[in-house]
Image 1 (cartoon, one colour):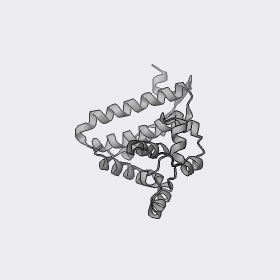
Image 2 (cartoon, helix red, strand yellow; image 1 turned 90 degrees about the vertical axis):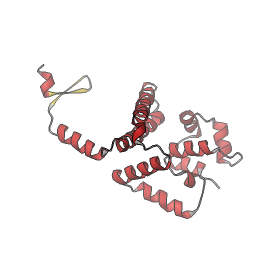
Image 3 (cartoon, one colour; image 1 turned 120 degrees about the vertical axis):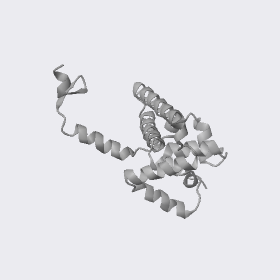
Image 4 (cartoon, one colour; image 1 turned 180 degrees about the vertical axis):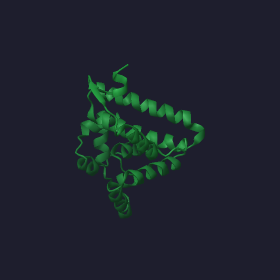
Length: 178
């Protein structure tokens, strides 16, 4: 028995929201949840990515996977980053030769975020932000750069920065006098 309905309910998402966010009709999703139709491999992956759970868990495979998903719920950013990188290796996405393609993927996800913001679609916004983080983690691995070091370095630069917020945008003190 698959866990499609269970996971959707746990995440407090309606069938309509899933349909809008994934492009899969409500009727087809209902067939999947009621096991009247079996999703294709690509659809399992799409839904697992959407719900942020392993495909095997979503398909209803054994208890060891339940413990795995429970562990994911308590992961630090660092361990989640490691799992994402492993996921990328398993799918042959992490590859320094594909850096330009991965950068384009980051840009594509930024476009989807812009669309979600413009349409005030919270599901799309959350999905896009998650996808942006995943694509940045993989890009940083392709570039052999530690993303957490980059983040720490950026915070080190901004933490004592002074300035003023003008029309919702923070302007550095040094830029205010130009």
